[in-house]
Length: 344
Image (cartoon, rainbow, N blue to C red; front, side, top):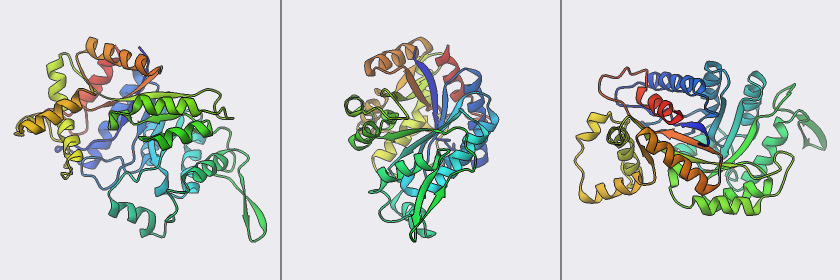
């Protein structure tokens, strides 16, 4: 088996308030830590009723404080939404408090709808219209500002030293994330670790990883290409039960891909009452065929097979299980069981 890590979108179920969803994710992080998982990453999404992961650095601070050894990271911070100095300061501070445990995964997408994206970038006098086109420059700025040496900033003919934190002893590990050729090529050219969003895209992974490896240039941060695979996973004592637990998330992904409004994640019994047409069932079957859903032996075998197919020694699992009616709102026992059964 490859090394295992966790991606958490902090889902919000129909039986949960935001605080419940965060508490259940903290419990999941503690479980992953105790089971020996390598990393625990949280996403950045905005204005979505089904997702509470709006602020990765804040969530990372809570998760790192609640765990002992697991690396904690962003999967990812959407850099065009933020001034690079702000991100550098947030992550440098986390690294100072939890040295050697912080990953900064950054992406280029908005992680939101157009209106919320505008509010993030312009509504409070934030970043500029050039934020997306200047992404490669911002990546360089982040690396420089988080380093102990800082970066020289020229203003009105004078050079001023700019540091993200006054006395850095170590630097968060920077990863580039993406679902296109652009991010794969950029990560290779800059000599940075790279992750393709296989759990979201489901296709194009092999091509993106091959492009990354072929364009890789060694850097002070990394001598050899480094990547891993992200997978949607549900593991239960039986494959049938795993399918039932994954159904609510499958329905949400179908809504997302067909332009329907997202709602809080239904409980298993609620999802099973949804009437589906033949076309909808076909979409669900096509999506689920790219996920890992099954009993422990079958799931572990499939994860190992996919890791070997893509030549990676680490897999980051996104536990997609919903809960049953009557579950404690502040807990996610089915997601915890997926991690436990997969780890063996």
